[in-house]
Image (cartoon, rainbow, N blue to C red; front, side, top):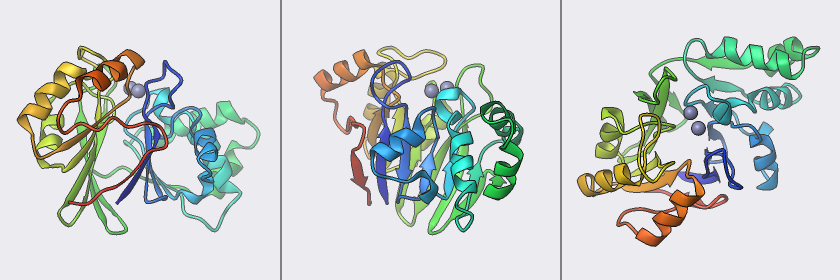
Length: 239
Ligand SMILES: [Zn+2]
Ligand SMILES: [Zn+2]
């Protein structure tokens, strides 16, 4: 599995907001600015057929309207959006705000399918979504992606909760919220990451959604089993 880090930062710094591209085809989250991020990495957004949304905060889904508009001009491609049940209505609403005169046509012509299941398959991958605890924003999901013995997780935005521990216990690689130095009831911090790395030694952790001071501190700490991603890094993951 190839995971390209399109964005590794939180909203409040020069890094792109957290989002990832798997095998040039599956995007995890589509933050505001994501289409521009992709173009800067020489990737045409219309080449992406699957979008896994973790939750409905703007820094995770606000570029979906532009993605859909772009896809509507490339009708031969597939558009599959994975989100919670109420997600389609939310996406319709922001498409209406983004381009009121053409959103109905764009929505129709993109021919998007919306998948709201807890488990599904994309090509060779079995994917499970798992509800995490991101404070008041409910539901918020992480994704566990399996290919035989390879298990790769994306927590999305979350505090330390049983779902994160479940992911750390079964994943060989986990892209893991680490926004703050000290975790809160909405986001994890370096204290939570230290706890996870000590308890789940078989897992390699990739802190994401980082504030700049968190990134700096993590670089100083050099924790075992932690790889600090930069925007544009790509990892070829296997067991
Ligand atoms: Zn969030
Ligand atoms: Zn966020």
